[in-house]
Image (cartoon, rainbow, N blue to C red):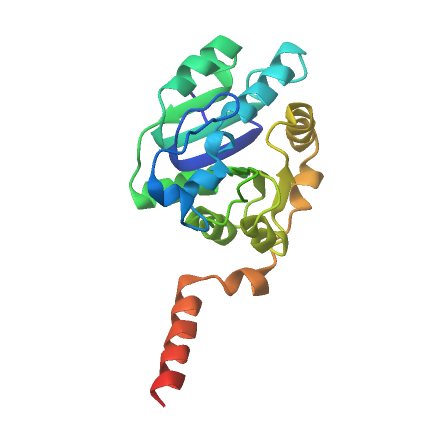
Length: 220
């Protein structure tokens, strides 16, 4: 499949397959004693399923055609997504491949127009506190970031980057409308302008320098 679509939304890394709300039973004594752990959140929204269903809405309504959009996923991507894409009738709009080298992955990301960031959702036990390294990688790439997420610390960090577009994971109509607007209006795409001074604070070399500074103060 060619990757010269009008709009390419990319994701690299691991992506498990979920459909619907994830229900997890407590089965470990540690669940009852730790203040926060991964059992406190709903991981089902950290997936491509909501994105796929939004694309299916656009395809079925005739609002996009082949060549308008490519959802480009590579890495440890669950095989079920190929099945889901076929069932939804969007296989022509999806490319799924395995891991690439770091250099190749960076080139693939730079060829994308938008980077995809699905996040876990809160439950009555707590909200997501995990901040994925991918969020910082995306800021360094400097492309718009489509985050499907509720309010969380990661979203708070990304807000000032100038790159964030955040929508609720289950708001499939809103996701579809946003994607369509990005395809139809390149000016809207360019409205997501990186804030270089803010983003540079999260560059590895700058973080390393900050840590070194803290150690210097302690040693002195």
